[in-house]
Length: 159
Picture 1 (cartoon, rainbow, N blue to C red):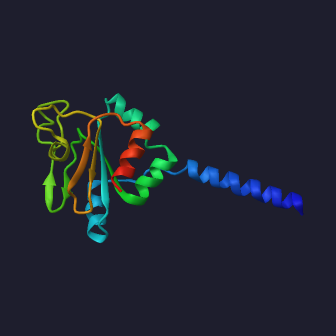
Picture 2 (picture 1 turned 180 degrees about the horizontal axis):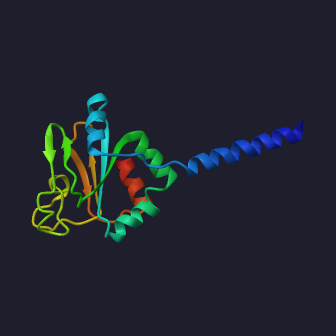
Picture 3 (picture 1 turned 120 degrees about the vertical axis):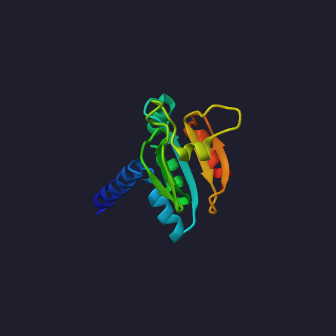
């Protein structure tokens, strides 16, 4: 009987650890965000990236994969990930957004990141992480690589 309890304990502990490792950020699109916000308002985290951005890729590998960060984001936010150079036409909040300059400029920025992640008198830069409240008002914007510790601190501050 004692061995059965020990085996059960080990199975429970390892299965819990395994399930925590599998926790991933549940990324959605702007179209899905539009639907989600109409059903249940919630805070929003938007991560803008580009395929060439090394720090964006590092955040994907080293930050967004952390189980505690993924859990916090999934519980408290709708998480949207968008390629800032996307050429997709996006319908959001009754408006159509496009990348108007993609035929003229190889790295043209889509309208949505320009709207949400532009700064006066500073060039657009990546990675850009934008935090919005339940009414879709910008709370904080970061234009840098954020370590797991830094992002977790920001998430906790914005609670």
